[in-house]
Image 1 (cartoon, rainbow, N blue to C red):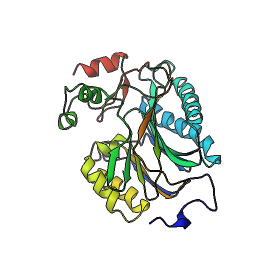
Image 2 (cartoon, rainbow, N blue to C red):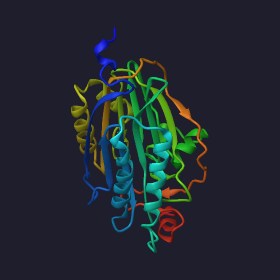
Image 3 (cartoon, rainbow, N blue to C red):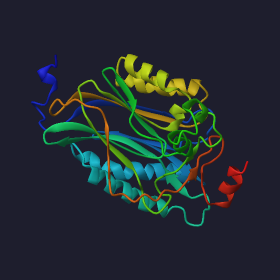
Length: 296
């Protein structure tokens, strides 16, 4: 039975959450190019890439643009799209004559209320991920924009093979690289007790989904979950920066039930492949350095 006090008598038309985040540079990288925004209603991880610390700047720009939406209780997909485009324009201007370019992934969960019903809004661009735990259901909501994911979708690669594939760090979409951002969106009815994990690939490169689910289920609270995820990833190797945000629904507008559904948008489908190397700086494909790296 649902406790009536956990619905929305005090703040009608909102989704209430508790959240926590954690980040670590890892054991290999010299700098942390991840940036995190954990201010309701936006809970975001951006994994930057590029030469001369451009990745760190690119991910920070993404946070700055989305942070403008944190003065309100909920967001719309249109507002998320506007923030993404604004960040993309600013990041593109960073590249200049640097052949390494600048870019960042973006993965986030935000809240929205449609017709009096509370929803999670999930958006991703690149291979940072969003997971959802809701009752017995555990799912990866986002779909990686990566070369290996395309091979999996075509039946040419298994999930196990993808984890060791030489192109496993090569993404096909990124913010600041290409003509226009091309994100995916999902609307998911919110249920009290839902837990959402937003993370960079520094987590998913080290921990398999079964361990991620187990930690998300058994952690006493969101603070413990966030700290444990990062600690485990570093202990497992820490080959990349690792960042997470864990969000839990404590009150919802309406009490819907349902699985996630992807939202079709009119965003342009032009995608640019970007090489992401764990042991080296990320390079946009098309540059001379990236071409040489791909041929190794």
